[in-house]
Image (cartoon, rainbow, N blue to C red; front, side, top):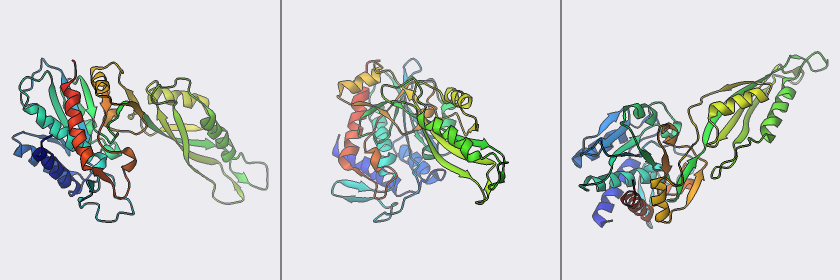
Length: 354
């Protein structure tokens, strides 16, 4: 990559870091991106705080590839050594909130899009969506953009994966469960302890194994994470509530998992949402084959992304940076990772055989 282009990419990442963009408050970075594309001679559409650009010579006879990453961030955690909204470059690292998750991926995809804008006879169209509310899976993020897009052949989602290809991604379903008993005095035997009834169901969640195991994601994982019951020491509780975090693999929809769970336990069960399903892509898909030709490692991702809203086409998740740095104090990206991210995305698309 030319040094001047890399410096432009670095400046854009710095500007994004230094513009407040915590989820649901991304107005500033949305406006920043619209102005950036305008300077490049590209008209950007804005839907809420999502920013969308399309190939200037869009050809409906060619397949369309979606490039997506997000410009929102989590709230800064405790422990930062400096202002998280001030980009600091030290020893080849760029520190700042959102630098790793997912500013470097977004900037890399933007400069990949700009690269292919200069390619006269490319065999595909590109649509880039810089999405909002990814960190909270919000309804004003990519989910509200998807119905406005033309038919998509496949997507590339930019997240920090150390430039490994995630060919599968776990889904998420949160369950609110309530065991019903009968309140009574602890000194007598006329109550039915809801805690004991909940314990039986909790043991089921702890030990049950769904039979379909994913090659890349492994088993469906269920974790009881919150429990609440009782008001005082001498009253047998009549209700016990608990929360279950369910991480699905691609062999089950969240609705299917819910039905199995509901039939297997005695407690009342309510799912907060069925929206966040697992996804996968064939290991023989052209984009995966292109990645394998570059020597990129395939893996299954345990973390959620905007892939959950790409229900009508396959997608792969890949990007510069390390997922273990995400949401941590003193988050950073190596400058070399940013450069490698841009180069890798370009090579992925240059080598693809559609």
